[in-house]
Length: 294
Ligand code: AMP
Image (cartoon, rainbow, N blue to C red; front, side, top):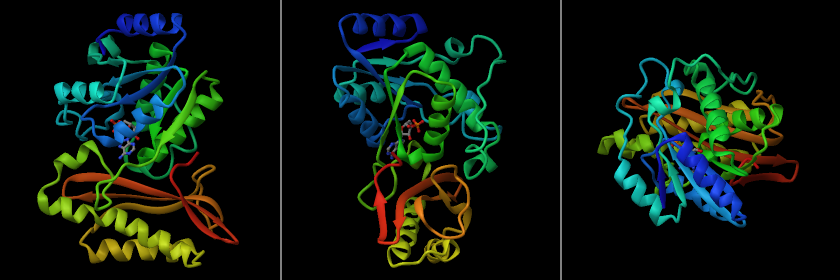
């Protein structure tokens, strides 16, 4: 596995692989790798003749002031070990100076789908994400890029960006990898105390309750959300930033559940902000949970 610390090094690696007929499947990450990232790598490895490139970069421009940029975990050695185990071909680990040699003045802004959900509480977050992903795409020039369903709104933002800016990359999604008790894997789970870790299981339990209400025929979004919030209240999750059901086409609100919808939540467990979601396809015939949005 090649470890590339500069733009020139990773470009050279990709160019050599391309010259020998390999396509490039790219998985951008912020490191502190877990099996959720592994699920993305597994999707990348399914690309025929694909050479898998993983980037590890804690991108400062997507953290709002006061967020956890400085304490975000950076266990590089164990991350590289995980990449070796997963059969990754190259890891791109740039320094902040390599990615942002001077103050950034060129930004990529996506409107619309950046507005609701996390967009309300994380000013500038999606601008930072869209900008760094564009830059990483220009550096790595992947044929395929893989993102996780876990960060559903991020995937929708990048999808819109790729579509509307005609970026020559195919996007694929990995389903959410979960612990045995349902908690979605996240690098931020490391912040949780034992008691908080226990309480955090309420997120997926709440989503399941909402899903089950929809499966039982409930089509009023407010009633489905009552089921979600009922579980949160019963399990001591009181600091709920949002619990919403939106249309998957444009993240617009719904009066009545129909078509492909996302049930998404964000809550603080102690000081740690966690997100999770489920995707549902609702029709006259019933309601089915889908592993990914596409
Ligand atoms: P991050 O390092 O948190 O920026 O995540 C890098 C990529 O891994 C993103 O596309 C995430 O959506 C994806 N990812 C993170 N956690 C999970 C998970 N539990 N299951 C699937 N994908 C995930």
